[in-house]
Structure formats: structure tokens, C-alpha cells
Amino acid sequence: MSFIRPPAGGPVGTPRPAEGAAPAPGEHGVRPGRVIALPSATGAARALAVVGLLTLGALIPLLGPGAALEGTGEALAPAARPVGVLRTVLFAALCVQAGEVWVARMVPAVRGAPAGLLPRAWSPVAACCGLLAAVALSAIVANGNIWPRTWSELRFGELYGTGDGVLALLEINAFAAAWLLALSRRPGLAALPLAVLVVAEAVRAHPEIEAPLLGSALTLVHLTCGALWAGGLLQVLRVLRLWQGHGLRQQGAALLARYARAAAWLFAAVTVTGTLSTLRRMEPHTVLEQLTTTGYGRTLVAKLLLLAVVAVLALRARRRAVAAGDPGAVFAPGRAEVALLGLVVAVSALLTALPVPIRW
Image (spheres, rainbow, N blue to C red):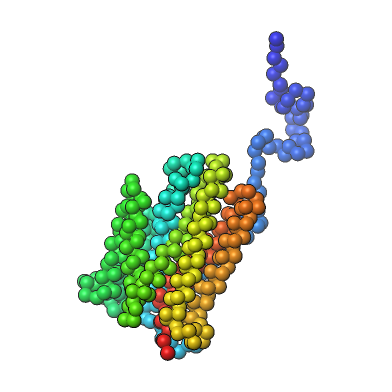
């Protein structure tokens, strides 16, 4: 029995093109199995849109205070702009770390999910950025809530004498511990210092005498759910992209379904706690007026509109994934959702730098 080896140009009976001749139609000189991906105008437009949204998110806390308070008669705090920028970094760092810790605990519950197949962790870098932001915020607190302009104004020793100073030190220690744990063999333990950080932020946000525990509890739930929602989505999209490259579509769909169910509850908790917190800061019969006549109210309206758009994008992404039977269908709307959630983080940070509305 003999075997006939086909010529190098193709299978038996396929003539080889003459040397120097143009390739046959449909071949384009590309080896079988290789595909040349041409740049997509739609993909480039989406990428530019995401970059634009992220740039806007960086400018909101820097330029937003003056725009929000224009025409309201309210005074701008001396350190409002740096505080807004630094709290944006702090909240973003919290979201990234909380999302990675949460999704890492979610993955083992997915049947057939490969153990340890996760994207490179961003938590160490996020914790380091959060630590630097917390140190800068503590310098402002120690200097009487004024941005220090000289070395002599760095009075970190003053932090031990005030409640806000102690909370600032607590946040520094929490980020430092989270950074060390993110670099350790048990990065999941970073959830403990992150919880301490959220508690410190919740207490700091409600210095009022009237029912401070209720206000702190609302902020605690609001901030925790918001960080898990935003950070969880970012990490889930990263995991899905990694798993898609390994052919784990079913596992990706299961992970996305788990996140989507939890995200619905997180969104509901963010909405309810945010509404209750607003009613605590503004009496019911003055809400509509203060939403347009105060910087806090205007910024709050912007945050609500962004959350509404994010909710629409989330529903669209889930429907596309179900209709296509492919979790990869959520990438396009998911990236836009993450970018808009970044804007929400920036607007939330701006709210902490604006004067609280006066209860009439």
C-alpha cells in the first residue's frame, strides 16, 4: 500500500500558483486558519468614548465644586477641589479592591471554573494609590481642613487630638494593611481592613449630633454596596475576557449570572439608602427646591441621572448576553457601564467636598 504526499501548494488536484502570480480570489495570501483583524471604526469610537468618560471623571472633582456652587450663594471650602480629587482616588481604590476580593470568592462557586485562573491583580496598585490619597487627606485634616502649602503646615501630630484626625489615621492604617495583604498569599483577608475603611468613612460622613448612628449606618450600606457593584463589574469583565480566551464560555455565563443577581440587590440597596440619606439632609418639603438651588442638590441630581443610565446599560447588557447565548456580548455595554460608574464615583467624591444643605 502506497501513500501519495500532496504537494506543498495544497491538496491533491489543486494547482500551485505560478511564481510571482497573484493569489487566487479568496486566498489573499493568508495562510489557512489565520485571520487579519482590521481596525473597527465602531470599536475605536467606543474606546474614545470610554477614554472621554474617564477623563471627564477625573475633571469632575477638580472643576466641579465651582460649577456646582455657582449662583447658589454658598461658600466654597478652601480645600474643596483637592479633597474631591483625593476622595475620588480613595473611593476608586476601594472599589477595585472590594471587587477583586468579592469575585475571587464568587469564582469557586461556579461549577467547572478553573482554580486560580484569574487576571493579574490590580489590588496592590489600587491600595498604594488609596494609601497616598489617605495620607494627603490626613494632611488637610491636620491643617484645619486647608491644603498645606509649606512643609511647616504638615502637622500630622495634630491628628491625635480630633475625631476626624483619628479617623484619617485609621484610614491610612486600613489601606496600608490592605496593601500588605494584597501582596501576601492570602489576598482575600484584605476584606477586613477594607471593612474598617468603610466604617471610618461612614462615621466621618456624619458628624451631626442628631441620629449620627442612623446616618452612619445608611452610609455604611450605601458605600459597601456601591463599591461591590462597581468593583465587582470591573473584575467580572476582566475574568470573562480571560476565560473567553480559554474556551470557558459556560463558566463565564454562570459567573455573569451570579454577579447579575447580586448586582440587582446591590443597586436596590444603593437606591434606598441614598434616598433615605437625602431625606435626612433635606426636609421632604424642601427637597425639590434644594435640588436646584444648592450645590449639593445639583450634584445629587447628576449622580441620579448617571445611575439611571447605568441601570439601563446593565439591563441591555444582560439581555444581549441572554439573547446571544454568549457572555462576551456584555463587553461593549459593560465597558460603558464601568466608565459611567467611574463618573458616579467621581460625583460621589464631589458630594463629600460640598457644603451640606441646611435643614429649614
